[in-house]
Length: 310
Image (cartoon, rainbow, N blue to C red; front, top):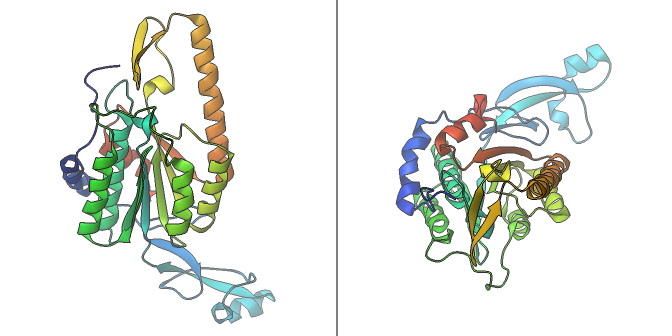
């Protein structure tokens, strides 16, 4: 593992990312499609601000929105739909667990998680949204409820900075198992208001059937995006040579020239990728990947894409 990797992001680093957030093109409003949503606008039944379309009446539609002219012309009830602007709380779930204390290049996964969390927080605040978060490592989980105040955002960033592991105090295997992604997702269900915009920043190394169920429950009433932080070694090993990966009990050496080791590694990667893809597909969560060697602001710009869709 290279010695030049950035191990963690300080509070000052995260505050300075406000400038990078300003340089990003802010996500524009867009309509909800399926379970996905934009940061500021969604399609609602009933009265709103901007007329969108007329469609056939569905149970639960507001009868005050029936378009009587179209109904008479087509001989079946039709409803007007409007695009209604509304405030959407943004909830950032930042995973700073033990598996993110790792990198082979660029920055540790925990540092990238912290940077992406900070950029999204600044973007949300600049867009006039409430922003809050659930920040956890293998010992603690802290909930910061959404608010539209810079002071609250700074408290969130301070929590993110403090919950990262330092090289001088790496994750210890002797510490009893604490919060994990599933516990954070369960807590998010309790905290999130219906219609929230939720970003989960994690490496998703420890997904399970429960993860799929929890993600699906969140996505039923909110717009949920998964931002996966990934190291190149998690995609493919070097073709030859020995290398070491730091672990809680010291460095672990691998021989990339060993064909049996290569096959076992690729089989493990393939199995995990299939499990993760099925998890996101089943739960209806949109997922994208940011690598440890990526520039966080540029990577997020690519993920936001036209109209701010992640």
